[in-house]
Image (cartoon, rainbow, N blue to C red; front, side, top):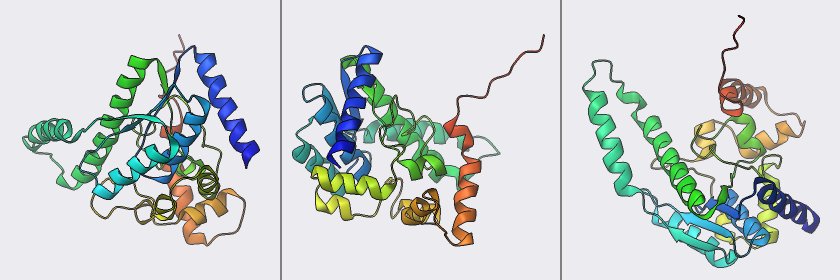
Amino acid sequence: MEKMIDDIVQWLRSAVYDAGVNGLVIGVSGGLDSAVIAHLIQRAFPDDSLAIIMPLNNHSEDVQHAERVIETSGINHLTVDLTETHQIMYGHIQEKLQQKEAFRSERDQMSDANLRARLRMSTLYTVASHYGYLVTGTDNAAEWYTGYFTKYGDGGVDILPLVEFLKREVKEMGQYLGVPQEILAKQPSADLWEGQTDEKEMGTTYATIDAYLNGEAIPDKDKHIIERMHRRTAHKRNPAKQFHRTF
């Protein structure tokens, strides 16, 4: 495990040096993946890594967990509360949409959730630009394969240190790095709406996705869900589709 972590830390340093920037920034949500990244980038750049807590109608427990990550990792940090910004922006957009006859209220929840993720991404890039940092992503192998991230939201990043690691491997990494037990044990959630959890929304579990990606047999029902998610989210993993002229 120490060798694996050291390899990631060296890779992070190389990414920064190759880009000609100063360090790394991460949005810390109180979840496992961002907690692991916070520990890793602090190891790579003790004086040039930054964690940003971005409350936006979060449960108080998530903010407390994010603060525990700051405490246990020793990373520099700041808090940017986006609640008011989101309320003004989404309220204005919703008002304009409701003036249209074709307004579809059933899409409100997801469009709102995606806006939250993109507001956080914009915040990270604004801060990263100020300090000359790269924005570090948190997607693991399961999330990347299924496309379980917001395009230009939590998927809008510069580097992805965990993208080839299964969810269970990230958890093992977290245990080794000293991520608090309450974070290791909590249900993964993007905190997009009340009662939302990743596994409930996906319809399968991270353990099942890990097994599938590891070449193990899983129930056909889960295989169908995973492959359907993979197909439908191909656009998230590829650059913008381009027209190629023939004349």
